[in-house]
Image (cartoon, rainbow, N blue to C red; front, side, top):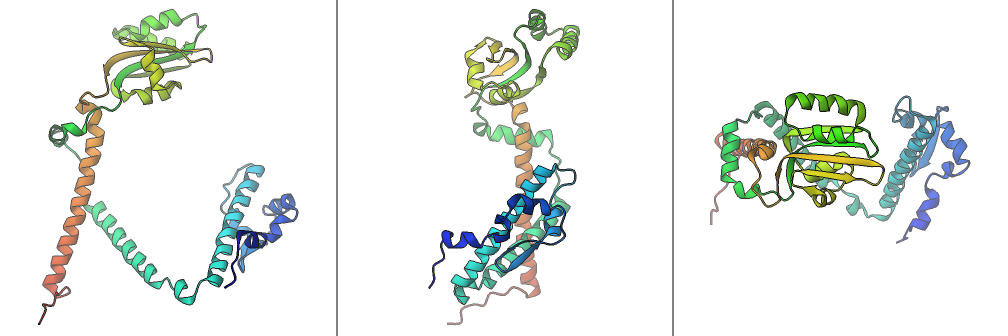
Length: 291
């Protein structure tokens, strides 16, 4: 059997593309013709152009076109080589295709059945019951906090005032903080009403959570990020890793789990009911051993 290596294959790919590459890819945008040939197949300009979003800059369009053509050519060259090198038996994929067809049709019907019947309404009682019976699954692996976060210039003339406003609980002063932050802060994030883990808090200001922990004193952290910015974090509430996660923090995850469980139950019930119906109709019969 003749063995074809990558070195043998490569010259077959996009022969027409290798000559005058810039002119070739530019012509894709203007000529209504064959733009590539590989593995005995032809690729037409219209097939490439329809994949390029309208309004894309010309250089980006050329890059996207080149990537698509090379991917297309690779697929067809490998298919051509595979058909040459594999025996007729090895090329026979009818059994695999039939299994895939059955699996795909089953999956699509399951999705249709579930979509028509699945309720996504989850009561607070359901969430609380699941939480109470699975407490060990909800232990914090990262610290979480309710926080207000500011990023300002380290040279800001308003930083002392912003520090004072950040840690207040007075609604009127918080309104003042909001207004002053809008005018003078690079970023102001108020997450005082919801739990976030410290990794997510750090992402908001471009600081890793270990840096936050090392600069944290009681319920406040102040970090110079090395770019002339000052990050201020006031922790309205805080919980360490290893503690029991509060229900409020777990609610969305529990809701998704309960919905997923409902979906799985619907599919299992469907399989059971269809099998029972087929048995009653005589479409499913198990023949007893007659020995």
